[in-house]
Amino acid sequence: MESFILSEWLLQHFDSLGDSPAYRRLYQLICRAILEGRLTAGSRLPSSRDLAADLGIARNTVLQVYEQLSEEGYVRAGVGRGTYVQDISQDLLDAPAAPEDTLAQEAAHPDGVHHLSRRGRGLVSRLGFSNLQAGAFMPGIPDVREFPLKTWSRIQNRLWRSEPWDLMRYAPAGGYGPVRQAISDYLGSVRAVRSSAQQVVMTTGIHQGIDVAARLLCDPGDTVWIEEPAYWGVRNLLLTAGLRLVPVRVDAEGIWPGEAEYARPPRLIVVAPSHQYPLGMVMSLARRRMLLEYARQVSCWIIEDDYDSEFRYGTRPLASLQGMDESGRVLYAGSFSKTLCPGLRVGFMVVPEPLADAFANAVAELYREGNMMNHAVLAEFLREGHLAQHIRRVRRRYAERRACLIDEIHRHFDQTLEIIGGDAGLHLILALPDGVDDTLVVRDALQQGVVTRALSTYYLERTHARPGLLLGYAGVSPEDIRPAFDTLARVVGAYL
Image (tube, rainbow, N blue to C red; front, side, top):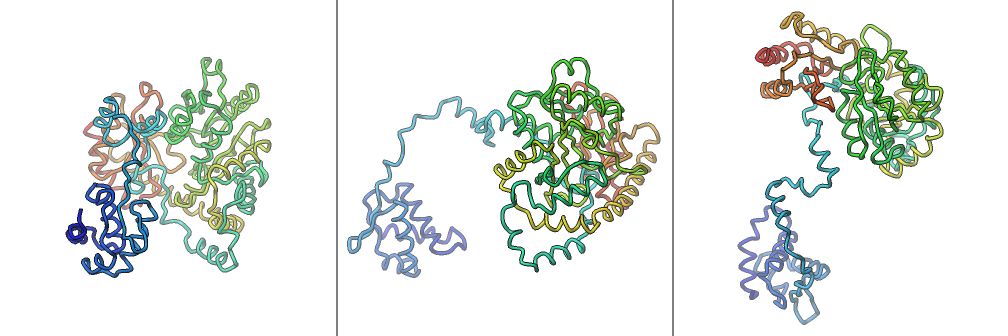
């Protein structure tokens, strides 16, 4: 391509790249001309003075572009000799043509899923998360409008004014020391957790805690017991780690293994004893003792998922399973996502003392933790007693919303539909009759602007699943609960 033709082509396309700087537009267009073969190897580019005049831009802009192209190997330049296009054809390897089966996969999966590993394909095929994180009746979401913003900001501002340079670095192994001590003290007083600050390892939430536990305590193919049904997030974490999941049924007293499960001891057991998710039952003392003794005998580990035990209505929060553990087999996982807000991304694990250093070092190595300003604010927030005050206040608010939702259920359905697990937490379950496809109810409700989740999707073995709807009430005011449930009741009624 002759120089005057290049100039004309650049003029035709210069404005098509929007409002980006002239330097960026010129660079992109010349690269495009070279890569598309419009400028062949050995072609001489116009002088910087001529091209600047043709395009109406500064000569220094052209000089900068030519220098950048030379550094990246597109052109070669010499003082007084001009600027020429390099031969870049040798940079391309003689690769074989793509196999027909690869081309067929690309045609069948334009979203690129076929490029993923088997593990990756399995993960994206089991997605349970939702981009909808608010509104009636999204379960598991606290009312972020209740966040104690003034108190939090006051503490944070005080810390920002006190030379917070250490809080702006990566966190030490295990996390910020004062918050580990504050969490240990808090858990000891409200959950009967027995720990030292060294045993508290900071995470971004329960997901990360279970992820690192699976990495450190299990090998691919190891057996893990999970409750049936169970939280989809934990289930997918473990499956993606290559672990063999055994769903163990739950009854009114919690997890209830049978002879078949006992015959093949697991490496890990994951339970939510204080408030089973999603059904809401509390593990009985007899089951707790049974589980702890079994773990001692077969030397397996127990992860206690304590995600929202603070919210019990009419009774005090229950003591932890970890507090009963005499053999050091329980890892206690918690977070502040439900008590404060999910966006903080502050969680923790309390691990047996022999595991403490390994877990602290692994989290630092794998995730390069920071977030120490939030950890420092939280330490003061806990130390000054603000969390306990906040929980008491929102617990009353959530109890009112729970009562309002139950009243609406009774008003529409009297006693014909069972309410499950409404004594604690941030959601309850509206059971549906056998034969009703709860996923279709969820779909139709969403089309009407109401968000809920299908109980059947929480079962690993769908053939044993019972239908129902998870209804979150914590983040919905009574004024919004009533009209939203009117809509949901019409949708449900069409399936009864």
